[in-house]
Length: 101
Image 1: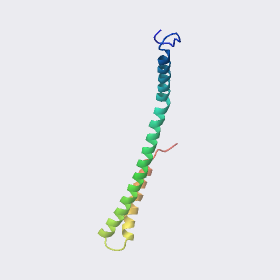
Image 2 (image 1 turned 120 degrees about the horizontal axis):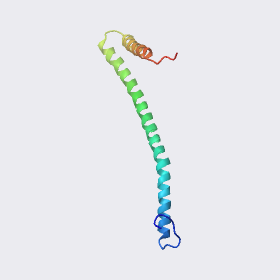
Image 3 (image 1 turned 135 degrees about the vertical axis):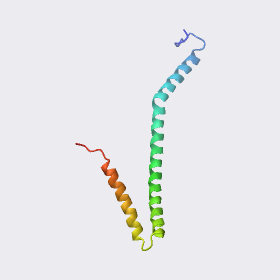
Image 4 (image 1 turned 180 degrees about the vertical axis):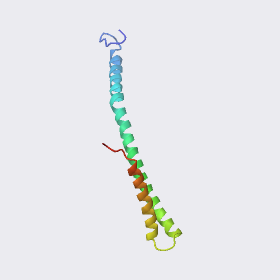
């Protein structure tokens, strides 16, 4: 009997060890591997979101500083231009939302 455990066989400890190892490997493949994949996706997603938010803030600050240099006058004009751009982008995204009836 090649596939079953036979205590009369001289290599039954090897067969038992192989069976336990195969069982543990199957359980690991069905539980740990998917959980590890989900955890990695969650961590990488959170890192990407934080980096994206930081990049957006840095771009906004850089745009205000660049406009402050480019537009003569006080800094409020640069803030006004950036505010208008963000408001226009927000209104555009608001118009593209899914409406629930």
